[in-house]
Amino acid sequence: MNLVENIQGQLRKRVEAALQVARDEGQLSFQEVPPFIIEVPREKQHGDYACNVAMLLARQARMAPPRIAAMLAGYLGAAGDTLIDRVEVAGAGFINFFLKDDWLFDVPRVVWENGTKYGWAAPRGKKVQVEFVSANPTGNLHMGNARGGALGDSLANILSMAGYEVEREYYINDAGNQIELFGLSLEARYLEMCGREFQFPEGGYAGEDVAETVRHFIQHQGDSLADVEPGLRRKKLIEFALQEKLDYIKATLKEFGINYDVWFSEQSLHNSGKIEEVVNELRERGYLYEKEGAWWFKTGNGEDEKDEVVIRNNGVPTYFAADIAYHKNKFERGFDWVINIWGADHHGHVARMKAAMAALGFAPDKLDVILMQLVRLYRGGEVVRMSKRTGTLVTLNELIEEVGRDAARFFFVIRSPDSHLDFDLELAKKESQENPVYYVQYAHARICSIIRQAESAGIKLQHPAKINFRLLKEPQELDLLRKVAEFPNEILAAADTLSPHRIARYVLDLAGMFHSYYNHFRVLNEREELRDARLVLVEIVRRTIKNSLNALGVSAPERM
RNA sequence: GUCCCUGUAGCUCAGCAGGAUAGAGCAACGGACUUCUAAUCCGUAGGUCGGGGGUUCGAAUCCCUCCGGGGACGCCA
Picture 1 (cartoon, rainbow, N blue to C red):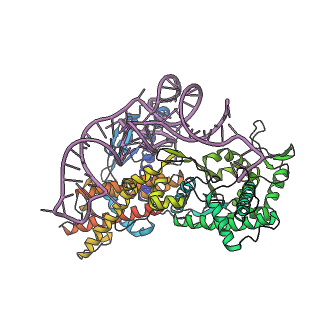
Picture 2 (tube, rainbow, N blue to C red):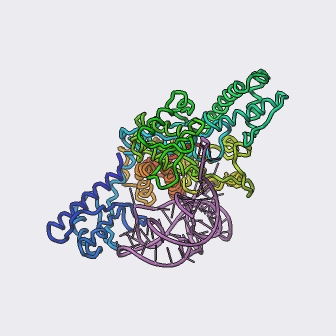
Picture 3 (tube, chains in turn red, cyan):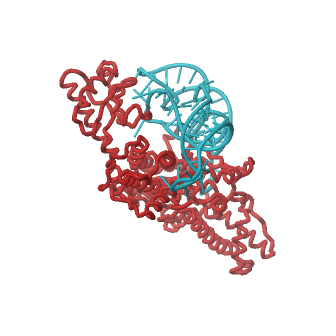
């Protein structure tokens, strides 16, 4: 049950009824009800909720907004109303609703009854897939992958809370040119270590981690491949390396708190002939044309030059072709909504991908791509280039070790995906003591401490039904109830706008309100009834903090 | 040249499906621990929302334009 949504719905009905009565009585003339909103105003003095209908009606009613608002208010604030305390008209014509506090006293019961599921919406019977990270299995995960991981996993959590059936997926790019280059790099290192002639490929993977993988291979198989046919040698090396790298990636992501439902191999699309199949389908539907020996996909109306090659003139399909087959496969699996998290450097790919889906008869609206701006890494003010090939990168493993999983995840997810993220490692380490994540976690730990303290004094948390919440008279207490009540709506808003950072902001706010309250009032005070009510209040705050942190993949410690 | 993101307090960023007096954290300054955890709190100070037009009852938010920063424009992925 979503209390806030419920209240907003009730107010909306009252406003609609008032509009009808006003029209029936000839006070107001309008053709249709405009799409007005019932919102929580920023300023507290503007009431619990505000409605903008008067401003929206001004034109068609040919009346000044404040006059409309005043007239409607006359129909709204009936004496004896159980919900509305009073109605005021203010500003440019806002109708401000001041509610009786009673509804707030329902909040603890609702939280209590939902328990660990407070904030979860009812299942809506829609399947959504979130694909994220999907880094090439040719190296370790870097800062950009870390951001994508934190973002994608949190988003998946939030969508799940919003009632969607969510699957997390990792697309393994284990085919194509990069893999061939990877093979050549492995081979060169291998021959080098076996003391043979070798030639390192131009632009190859020169990183130390690749050399290390080759060393591992030699530990297992020695120089058994030194004299075999190069194609076979590379195949064996690639097989070994991909397995090792992928295992490592899986372990790292797990350590970062991310668990995937599906690991999808690009190679499997090649093997099963799905790529060829989808290319043929596009060709039959008339979306491909041949030019200079290659096959091109028509992206737009043919006027621009954004067309993209799907089959190279050597007959080998491109990454784009594989990706089309992959996305077709996604839709065929019956997802109602497909979300990809890509680095901003792939933005040119979005329109093409959507066009390809449309060409295949799928609704492109069902595909959403979050373009995450790239992370730029600094070390003591120096920009660090992140390149897998040269191996100069800070890995996710190092990040977890240096900054900690909780702080790292919170840090990535507190910013909107649109923000360019400058990450200075020195600064992050220095600031780790002051990181906002500790502020939130500390609030949780403090509440746990209060409850422990109460228990050791023989005071038990009681069911809200047994509590007189009218004793909570302090404005800060009512504000906390209000804030907790907003949580389910915050989740829905974060899901709708694909914005996990809203939850990070929310929980930071809630923690701040709690810390302030803590410093002003004593929960465990002498008056038993008040004490019991406050104990339940801080407990529902604790649960809300914990559920928020869970959504972000951050732990909620009981002691700090 | 085309496209995407971005420009808000000294710094890092929220707010941007239009709403009322533009917010938070950090940094700065001044206070609060005999009391449930001071990783906290309270107070002070800090702004031409990059510039200029437009739409509107109302613009940080939408549109146009200019300027600054980042990125993409491959038969790489």
